[in-house]
Image (cartoon, rainbow, N blue to C red; front, side, top):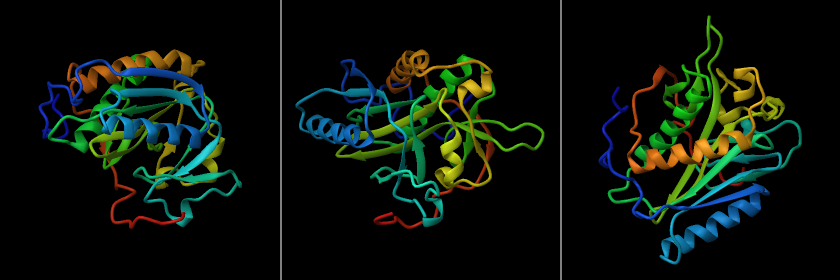
Length: 253
């Protein structure tokens, strides 16, 4: 299979500037604001050359986060706190049972944001398929990892992405639904998408799949895709409208 488009950066080479392995931090449950502040501090130090690449692995207490393209109609109806963040995309939920990984890495030149996102998706697709969902893949026009709906049922998102790159340093990252509740998604328009659903590995596989079980496979496979060892392939099974296209950035949402 081939990649969705040829990357600006050679697909067989590492997309990271640094050759040394990144430092991996398994942090347990961390409040969203605390983790965001930590990311910002590490990103500034990485940009200044004071530290090497870092990868944060954690879970958050239950919280909504609203990206730059969040619309008023996306917002929650249940009163749970919303934090407005500087990543792309619209609104989503984080909480216990969801694996969150934040790479703080310096990208090699020339920087290709799309290729970076595709490499993260590739890692997640590989891990989700290895876990037992062989038809997981991409929906062209929408980020993340999807499970195709059968017999007219809507597709279901099992992993979401949201990133920010400043001074060549990445922030934010990925969230993989392992055994979290889906109740909180019912009170928002997740990622601004009304024609698809959300799922977890546990629901799809019919067994308990924990964050602890998935942490090492996700981190190890992510390192393989960032290095170019595991290359981006065409795993698209459908296409759909981009829920952020044409929307202005909202301030103070």
